[in-house]
Each structure stands twice: as C-alpha cells, then as structure tokens.
Length: 128
Image (cartoon, rainbow, N blue to C red):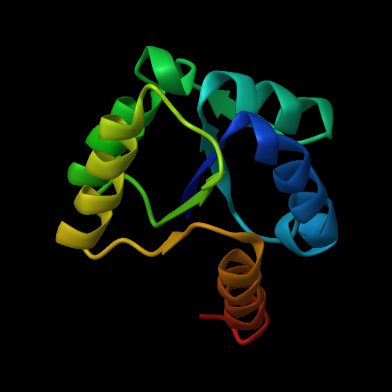
C-alpha cells in the first residue's frame, strides 16, 4: 500500500498529530509513505520513514498527481487549509481532479482521513 501525504503550512502539525494516533496500527501494515518535501520533513521527524518529493509550491503536488495518474498510489491524504491563499492552487485542483478521474480515495481533512485509516486497520486485521 502506498499513501501520499500533503499538508498546507497551517495543517502540517495536524498531519503529524493525525499520524501519531495511528502509529501502532500503521507499523503493522506493509505501507510506503510518500509526501511533498516540507510535509515529509515534519512526518520524518515524528518517526516515520517517508519518501520526500519536491515542496508543494515547487511541483510536489504535481509529482503526486503524476503518481496518481500512473496508478502508483492507493490513497492520498491532503490536509488543505481552506482559509488561506495558495499560489499553487491550480496544482491542488489538478491533483484532486486526477484522484477523481482515476478513482483514488482522497481525504482532505482529519475526519475523512480518520475514516479511511480506520478501514485500513480493520482490513489488515481481517487479512484483506
């Protein structure tokens, strides 16, 4: 299973906090994490092994979209900050569209990510 992780600057702490809540469960799953550069650095500091791509505004969102288009991802978690302006918003919209086109689950907030990660851990317990 390969999961892409992205978080706008105002949501990076939320991403790390979210992942900490699932650490024990995720360590039991054959999981590969990929993240945009700065988000990946924060995740790495919290004890996860993560493949870091470029920072979002420098093309990291587009790199993840390309991976999604090539069916190299099973899930994308993108904690967006809807109350701030982002110069790379066209890349964000492209990533979301690519996930929809290729039927890749996309969580854009902790509540939706929580539901998806709980399902992952249930499936792992059931041997799926």
